[in-house]
Length: 129
View 1: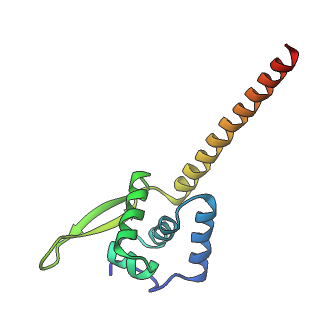
View 2: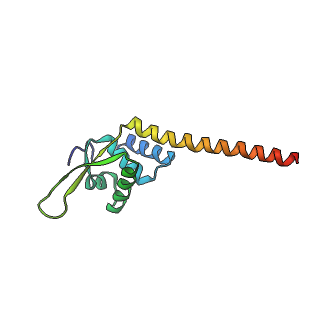
View 3: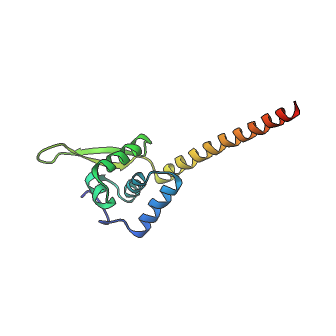
């Protein structure tokens, strides 16, 4: 184990993961992100065990986080046989990740406000003709 503090999610970590879900992250992505925030470096096997996820679920969640550029592979360690084990780490600060999420909502809301105002203009134009 690279640096895992607890073998299971704490009540607070569960609450944080639930809030990430409420914000719009997928459940597994939220759980993996919470682990990434809690620990400096972590392997996918450690994520599976602590987050109670299966390997494909961990891979999809890590892929989502890497696509967002929030997580990166920092190194690989070779075990005696088989594939090397990748070590994952947050590539952005938590505040930056939260700002990314917030920015996406602001962008979505701004677009919707513009659309609402456009509907208002079109309705007024339609009523005046």
